[in-house]
Length: 368
Image 1: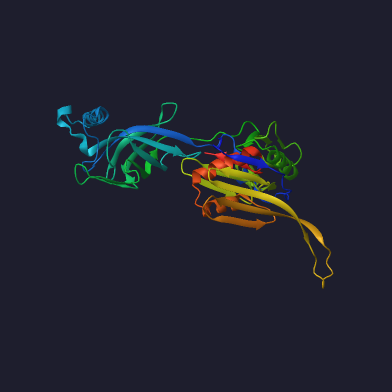
Image 2: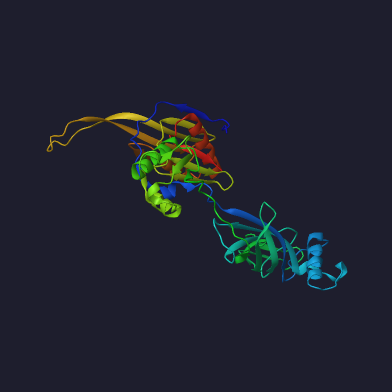
């Protein structure tokens, strides 16, 4: 993203210290391929609403009510139904791996029509299906919402959060087993979730060191094929439990995450900045580098040594100036300085994007 009227100048890169290492257990770094959750979906009705349900000619609601009541033996017609106390909803659920019949999971409920609120409603019995079209669970229960909507008069309204979206705690009962298939003969696979050749090579080395040579091998940077040792027999669960406790040393992740929709900026660790100069509208910021001499204490008979100092200066025309002095300026200090000047989050995000494009920020920038 280009900044209109912006001027960027890069002078030199800063020599930074090696990244600190962190010890990570494999259960936090890897997942077992085949052990995954599953999504369910269903269409149903919420009843018991105090006049905040679907109004007007809501075919989805009235037709659903007619079919339900007909199934229950009530011989009614569409003229007999007023849907203001009822709402058509979409129900979603995520199943954990290896769930058994009789276990329960939470479900989400979202209005499909023009209902104003689902507060106080009850979800009526609804089958939940998977991608294969089969019914895996049945949902029913009281809907809980985290907001409200009030309409005291024709032109008055007050709403907090989203009262048309809610959930039913433990509202779905499993009717079919969902098992995880992760073992193929005597081999299984571990996934990193992203391509990282350093992490992948260290995981392979740790597994081979712990269980013996040729236990693990990887063809790329995200998947590791593991052979079940003969000493473990068919105990794949015990083997995976032992694998999860093995640790590897990896560099601390250096990442800056920005969310353009919410204007949030998240900085993980000390992300160094190279010397640069940025002009953004009426805002000017600069990271400059200079050499200084550190004279040792006379009593300690210390020797003089050269050292590098940096100045981080943020200034807005006609406003205040913020100056931070350190041996190495960081993104966290830059964001803090811009916040002190009252720079908007979206302008900060734009500046960070261009600083990263310039190569002056030694970190991965993730924009959501």
